[in-house]
Length: 161
Image (cartoon, rainbow, N blue to C red; front, side):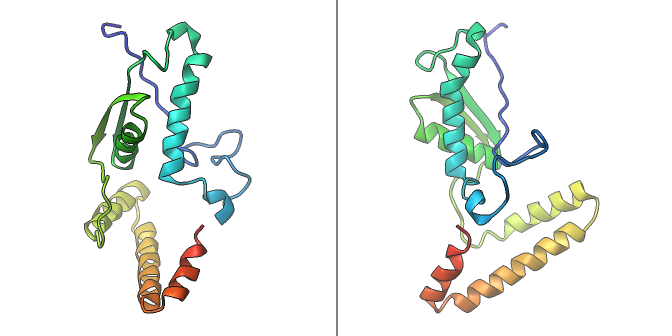
């Protein structure tokens, strides 16, 4: 404990291995339930963890006023790390955000290459990537058809919570 630090790894809501037979904090994966699956909610989950953790681990003698929390993450987790620091500077001393896409980029077609490589690598097959590609094409075609009709586009987007 040269620097008297503590590493805590936090699992994102809805991600990871099942807890008590479920990997989600809701009874189902309906649109209503999935409204909790947002980066904003994840940031607040992290902030609440930082506030709550000292009370459940008193042996570490942590305090929200004196403990210097540093958030780390890569890719999406890196974005969360940066946004957490930006929103909760009172809780987070610093953030390390590796390869973090913190600003949205329209027509970010290069992202597809990373997704394709990841799907092929982790699934060991091209079937998952092929299904994802078909789904993206259907969504693109649907959005293009609705582009000239703001009312229909708004109605369509409301179906996604």
